[in-house]
Image (cartoon, rainbow, N blue to C red):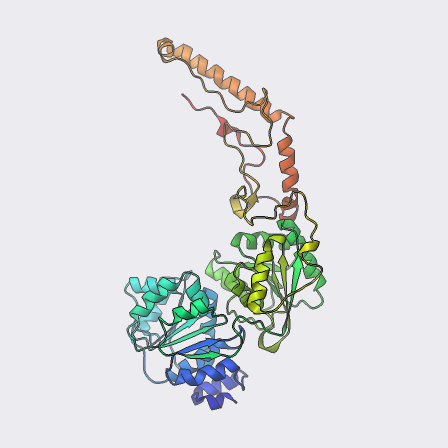
Length: 508
């Protein structure tokens, strides 16, 4: 079967041929004819199998007739992330080069004014994230009662990660007679039930087992201790071991702060790395992605914002620095490599606390993942290792997202490690006297008394700072030594001592 057999228009076929494609993928061959016929479609296929073109090509063919009016788009595509929305726009530009289509991209991090100008000209294709779309709607700059085709891409993520209320609001604004297309790599049963609210007698196109992984990707589990600096050392050794085959790689972390810490560590150890997470400015995110696509960056440390649908064709390796908490995310992460028939490798660092997440992943994909060098039972646990929670109750965030073992004590308190002694007072004494006597005392006497107490307090604090009886300080220094060696200079803060100005006794 070729694209010419699917019923696409000659202009679209010419653009597809110019792009170098001749044979459609299974999801494209199954979904395009039904989409051209105006039927609702629920498409499920592995990531990297061409789902974007499966709805892009029939939409362009159907848009050849008609014209958009101001603020009233003809079609709407909802995406979970800004990067994925921008990528879909690129697909419309590539395949619609023989058409004069107005395309509007509504995503956060970009000026409202530029987006409003595109809406005023009339948009044949509106690509948006739910939040920014509703912002424009509430500002009165957008009407959705002319939408003929609604596409919800990465449907499981859109429905499963808090977008359900937004999707329901948007669907109420669109005519009931619309055509709706759902596409995703995973579709759990509970999410499938939710699609019944939005689809009318859909045609289900499932060309591969839901939540299956590509056979072209070699998957391995790598054991690691739980401490962050141990995991970073394991990752560095793994990257060096794969140096001969590693062309470029995406390294996934569960949290934004972990992305920043790992990025700083890799740069400090002379790796060519960049970072990508949701808190970055949109221009910086797009520039980072462009640099990685163009080969200017070898390693991209990213959160799950880069796990879904991003089309970077030739990624040789994927490293999961953190085991994903949601098993479905594993499928999307390793789907960044081994795309379009190419081979790839995926390594996942696992600690003893990650055992249940690894089991959930293996249950979802229906296969056991091999261990690279012994399983979790071979890990030698340090006495100080904390196996349990990923976030200790004593772990707090300091400036710059850096984790500190505990906050420094406030004025008038001592840390748990420091012993209580006569030379190290546990609180700053405050002058207390009986009211009648104090009221009867002359003003000069009260002032002298306060000055004497203030001077005495200052002497005690100076003695405490200079005292050698500070074993807790030495332990704190040793405990944080690995973090400083690994991440470089710590952010400027209080250091080991609270500044003296914070210990000045307030006037009573």
